[in-house]
Length: 255
View 1 (cartoon, rainbow, N blue to C red):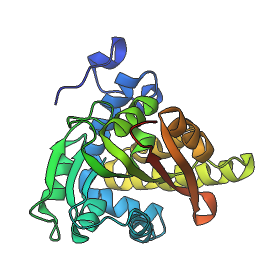
View 2 (cartoon, rainbow, N blue to C red; view 1 turned 45 degrees about the vertical axis):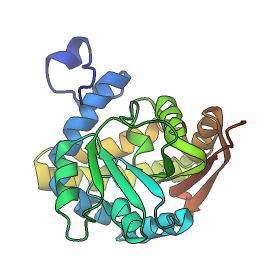
View 3 (spheres, rainbow, N blue to C red; view 1 turned 135 degrees about the vertical axis):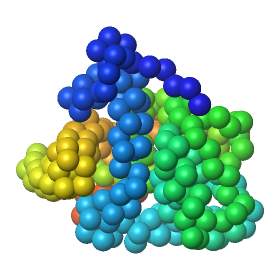
């Protein structure tokens, strides 16, 4: 899938972290390169930064989603396929989509990958699927990384059937300035160290706190979901509100 290139400085070479949020096209390029770089260590990093709780949180999300046999599930920013595998194990028909080919390749090769799962390289802001085709859309750490969040939510709304639901797990942006400073400080220090050790570049995982600083936070995401046409949008705090599971539903066709 071809995505637009950035303009000016970003179009002529690698995008630096300090420039990654200049505009949606620049962020798209940065995120694509970043996750291609870290794909092989993605599972390790998510476990370390979540204090080993990442899989528990994903199981919690899937319990809330409660996919039924033969439900059609679209897992966005699927990474190495954790949520997709859980949905398939429940009997759902799953499509896993990620921006990077490397992530999709790893998801295909995981030992518990369901042979019926379809894997797609694609962009959350321009989903290569037809409208009203899915009962559930799930994403782990996906909404924070899209270059245009309102556009991505509009696309998710488009591909859900009336009554279908969206569930998202992600870092939160705490409202308390003190808590936010401590939280982002922890992620910056730990991320810098891991970036140097694993990739020789401290900026590699500094992207996480940088993206959280620009994220609208739990309440802001609820508002954006409502603006996109979702109903019953709500945020469920995880880890004392440092993480969030968002749940929203597409209303009936008459909405």
